[in-house]
Image 1 (spheres, rainbow, N blue to C red):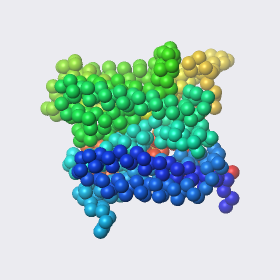
Image 2: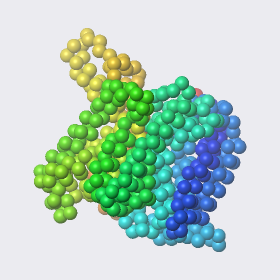
Image 3: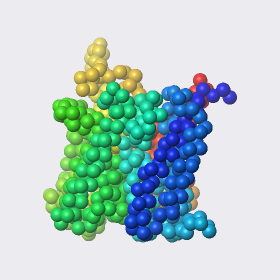
Image 4: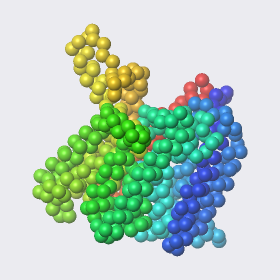
Length: 522
């Protein structure tokens, strides 16, 4: 077979990224030293493996042979490779190495390789779906839990974007690599050099993350958040801006005060905003933010979902399912807080929970289920379909209605004053069609797989689990509700969801194109 893809070049750059993954692995290593509650040798061994494996992969090819095809392969393989390496600390903590490394969490659910890979892929893709239950959280050390948070922060703005920003060998083909990984239709070039653009995006991302950490800890110092110490402030800062949702607390943000929940809301909204807009604001161009059509649409959608949920919670027709949530009904302040929090969390695909929405009425759950498919803005850390695609779809539908009445009219689609390329519009429809086709396929697979072992999984639970993993949202409903986990699913279903998280984070095309014959040969 005559291959048209220089796969060695792709693998060599994957090796570069894997090798440098050993640097962020030092952070949980330091935490393990500080707390002394396990994980030290597990992270030390993972650092050695990451550096050694990465160095070997680097030697296999010449990165200068990178082209468009090689870029797709490199990006897809990078995200899978870092997830595999990221699972090693979980497995080493659970199993150890006979005669060399004692197990520090032998009873962990992450002892199962499928579970460990699920948790790692969920972290790096900022999905936030977990196989850990309340008891599992107590089993693991501070270092292991911090690694979960750190994987989300690394994946939030993009591992390849980070690599382009700091590694000179990736700067030449950086533009096509960033386009392949882009969390949306594309990344705006903010500076003349793509590496500087990558650094600009990451600096904005890191700056807002640090601000949230400081403010969260400030609430603790001020007495408004007794359990929001330094560790929790860092952990939640890492996973908010990544729209990840992993928390060291089994009950997510419900474990903290109302002040914490209100503070997290604007940061989730910021995480779902195109980060290029923040760069323009920092350059003094505030008009760019408020004149952006996608941003206005995004804010309007979050506001609409908030209003719907607030009305449902306030009137309380479905809240008597659990006594713990019944007091929200009739209390406008409480209804608004939980509505605003869950609207921002689900629309931006963060996946935090201020309360168990499994206890909500069917109308409230249906609103949240629809919100799972919305997503943040292009250029944000959010997942799902993305606001700009929904905006273009709505505009094109309105045009079709107009043209059906005025068949001779010529009406190009415009967004922010610019005429949209019709090929791009067709691409958006194609992406959305494939997205929902994967959703249907995944739902059918999970339902059949559950029936195979006689596991009781309702259709709605299967739908929400698949939608939440494909859209990188995290929690769903029923057995995968915000206070539950994905542990009940079979290994085959969990591995399918690993694939869905991987495909969903990379916007489908860079992964699916690898499975076509034309990609490799034509």
